[in-house]
Every structure is written in C-alpha cells, then in structure tokens.
Length: 105
Image (tube, rainbow, N blue to C red; front, side, top):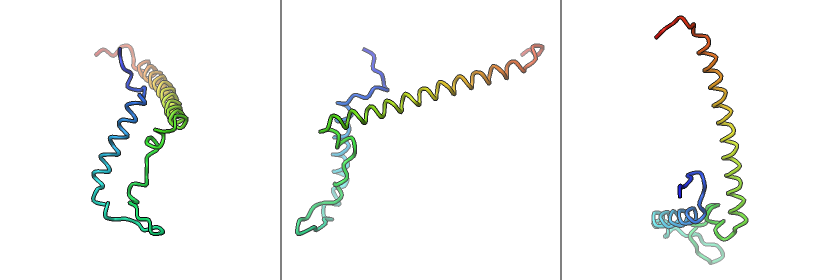
C-alpha cells in the first residue's frame, strides 16, 4: 500500500508529540530547580505550556477539528497552486507565441 505524505496519521502524530515532549522535558531538566511558589504549592512553571496537539490527545473532537482545519488549508493551498500553475502556463504560451517562427535554435 502506497502512503500519501499529505495524509496525517493520528497515531504517528500522537507518538511524535509524546516523544517531542519527553525530549523537551529532558532538555529543560536544568529548570527543575526554578520553581514558583503559589499559596505554598511549589511547581515547575516551565512545563505548564502543553501544545495543541498534546492537549488534543484526550479530546477526539478537538483533534478532529484541528485535522479538518489543516485539511481545509491544504485544499485551499492546492487550489491556489493549480490556479498559479495555469496562470504561469498561459503566460509562457503567450511568450512563446511572441517569438517569431523564423528564429531557429
């Protein structure tokens, strides 16, 4: 079966997000000593910034909404690319018609 690089596999996305989060957590290990004190509760503020992909792991509706948004953007880009491709091809045809037929290469 041939894989399409434009189709996002949710399982791979979640695995990548999880792996990236672990790598970042390891790299930010030096910040563990920097804790904030809030009402006597100390916690590390460096890890309170989960990505949209990581937050959506537990929420299928959010993940589906995000993927639908990405697919819509991809479709718009594809349509824009096709329009630009046709425009460039038409311009090129026009330029080639301007070259006199007596010129031989």
